[in-house]
Image: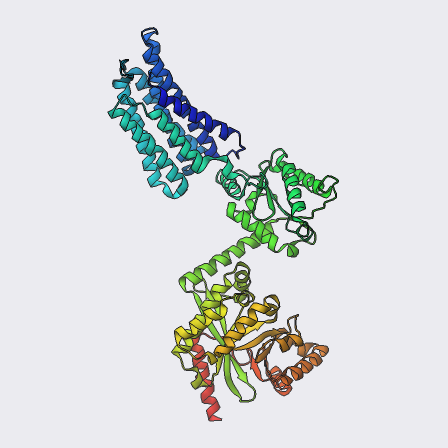
Length: 636
């Protein structure tokens, strides 16, 4: 009896069943669809074997029973192709109503196929000497036609809806169906080669290994579900409109970081075991030592969160003496984020700015905080669009020399236009860009535009000796800053003495070693430096002595305070004398009135910058301003 191949397929399915059922699953829709396909394939192989036995023993069995068993096997073949279709539809139709509708539509088609298979005649061939037996006839042909039609629908769906189906799922399903179709074609041409059952088992093996192995969703260290599983599960909840609550337990706290590695490992293991045992909650290990909990039953989430926090207060270890003080970020309503990625972004944003939102270590995300995040994401997208579509502009604010009584430099300031062409104030996007790292791209784009401007215009004819360009904190910590900027200067063929880079005190505090290395390389090349925003809270004259700068810029706030606070006047007078005693020049920013200008002039400030002379101007208007100022100076 030629059932060896089918028995191998059945044995393979039993092994897969053992490994699949011995691991925990998240109960994803795709997991359910896979399991339905698995069961149908298992039943199909079983009836394949039974049909071979029935045909071989048909002399001793009722003819009706033999035909029923054989036709049932054929019906399960159509069922396998039907469940293959439903499997890919889980990605295409994420809404339950849409998925049920497609199940009904194709279910009617399959039901008609099954009725026809049972209604049409079937015949049998057996050659006991050669060990060959198989069925044939209209019932068989109908099976092949309907199965092929279903598989064609699957192929069309894969092609037309590929944007909705993950690439890995597309590949796995194609391999699965390719093996199945190839076996069916071979069996149709050579009926004595009964390969379809084994091919179905191989297809299941491919799906298991590529997509449906529950072990792929488990974090090996903790046994919790991993980051990928979190994204899949929460995506399903968002796609189906299922509300949920979330809790992030951030263990990256000072009291935790000081633990020995073995103690840390034991605490994480014990905490993971406790959290995994909680009812009605799914627990995920995110990046680092961050644990995410999802509560599908939102009404129990608050009491569950309280219970979890109380358990952490009891301590860990055999004696409960190991105390951990995590940050708690509680999202009571999944509707505060639009999707899985936004939810993670929200948690990360709160985590990075935790001290701003709460004095203790528990933060409940509010509508206001979520709205703030959405606004930041809009700004982030604006920056992305501006860099991509070249909506970024550089404006120039002239700087006046009190000694030469003319404009001798200017500060380059970045501006961004939105889709409507309106200017977006820097205060809206600079902070966001610094937080998400895009300030590196903005900084380089600004520097490139400044170099391009200098290469196309001889600013020295207007008396401009150099242009000041700001460096952000992030840029100062970038190890290849000097290499990149020198490369850009050489690309545009400008003299390096036309560039003066502005650093802030906070930048040099955070990345002093890297900054000094960059500064040395750029200064050796011919670029000069200024210390910007002196007087913003970290002012330190020792600092100025340490930094190889040529100019110190008094912040607008310090300038204003000079006229509003008697004590600040003495501080600024002393600072001016000390800085100029170091042979450094001073720029006073934010000068807006004639009184302020005269006072700063009398104080001995070297350079004046502010609205008293001009607001920042676009390139063309800036050049026109310089030309007019030069003509007026020459008249005098």
